[in-house]
Length: 122
Image (cartoon, rainbow, N blue to C red):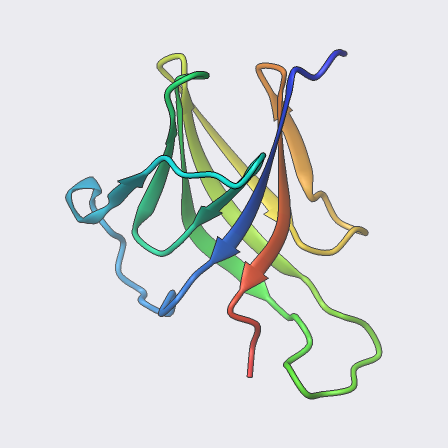
């Protein structure tokens, strides 16, 4: 399968501890990227006009990353639940920060890869 695009997702999630579901009215649409890296924050939707898709974080399902300043046996993992709307279809998927778990997926020949989750636990 030929992959036309690679989109890496680096997440900076400040105050993502809120347990309430957000409505679309509370979300900010962003379009900026650095090369192929998208940075999505809390209450944001990334919109790609060229490929006509919207990507957002639904939730952080698990975050067992090793806290900053602590010596750990392994670096841990964070699992993030995403919603993608492309070609009028909704795609739901989970990606992980640790390489032993699924960290990327391909949808319509576009590769989405989770490359990090911030903030790291303290």
